Structure formats: structure tokens, C-alpha cells
Length: 231
Image 1 (cartoon, one colour):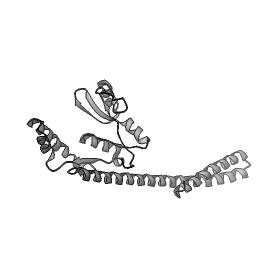
Image 2 (cartoon, rainbow, N blue to C red):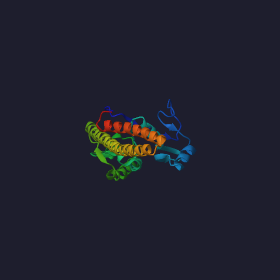
Image 3 (tube, rainbow, N blue to C red):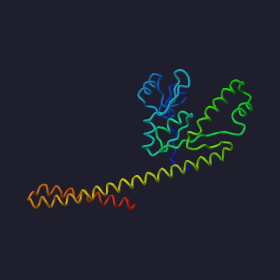
Image 4 (cartoon, rainbow, N blue to C red):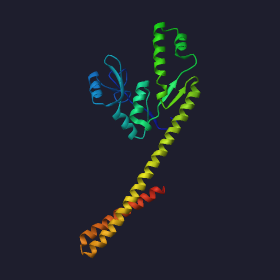
């Protein structure tokens, strides 16, 4: 993962486990009724019923769990699922469409000699349908040469994660500026109220203002240090 901390999302499915597959490792295994219930509760980022009672999908809670653990989550989904995920996360997500040119899928399937003409025609039609979604993605990578495509994907993803980190730092800096101003106002207001209460011989409220001054002073120092990059 080139130190990018990438991790695939763990999808949910309604099919039974195969071999040594474990729940929560390869997939989350649900019954068809459980899957439908979660669909009704809007718990999926995207899902698909590939045929009757055989569902696959991505749970929102699982993605948030992986994000909270510091992972940059990778999805390998169809074009509709990709568009749904992008719509949900907006600028927090990078959508990449992998396009094959050259001879294309028809030439590949034909060269195998294992698929009937109608199967090839069906898969070509699906590929052409999916190609129509390419403009909806953030970037399109042409996979004519695997090594070239891998290098381009790495470049695009690295740039996206770098830009996202920069944006987070800017957001944190802006938040600290706001907190700094608010705590300065609070500190000055506490000084004024403390002086007024001392003049009125109201020593308990005056003492309370001293506490407010201390807390806001600590916050001012912390915000200032963070803005200077010392924390």
C-alpha cells in the first residue's frame, strides 16, 4: 500500500461462508431477511441483489469503523455502487474508473475460447453500459498496460490523500483561530466582571471569574501553541 494505509472495506453478503471464511474477516454474513432489514434501515452505502436472495453490499457502520481506525478505505464495486459511495462522501472520496481499451473485453473473451457467443455479447453489452458512467467519476485510468495503470493509480491516490491531509490541517487551523478569539473574549469579559464584583464586594462571583480567567488563559495558550505548530 506504499505506506498509504489502504485497506479494503469488508462487505456484507447473504451467501453462506465458503471453506475457512469467517464472519467479519472476508465478509459479514447475513441472512437474506437480515440483509433486507438493513436495507430498510438505510444501513448500506451501496448494495446489489445479483440474483434472488443473493445480496452484496457495503455497510456504513463498518466503513466508519475503519475510517476511525485511521484506515483509508478502498472499495471494489460496480459503477452504480461507486457513484453511490461518491455521492455519500462527496469530496472525502476519490472515485476511480478503470477503463480497458485496445481489443477490449470481446477480444479477451474470444481468445479464451471458453464462452459462447451470446455470453460474450452479454458481457460486452454490460461493459459498454458501465463505460457510460465514466464521466461521473473523478478520474479515469486506462488499463491497457498494467504497470502503467498501477503507476497512474498510485500517483492519483497519493495526490488525493496529500490534498485531503492539507485540507484537514487547514480546517484544524481555522478551528483553532476561532477558539483563540472566543477564549480571548471570554478572558477579557471575565476580567471586567471580576473587577465589577470586587467593587460590589461580591467576592464569590469574583472568585468564579478568576477561575474562568484561568481556564480561558490555558485555552488561549493551547490554541496559540497549536497554531504555531508546537503541539
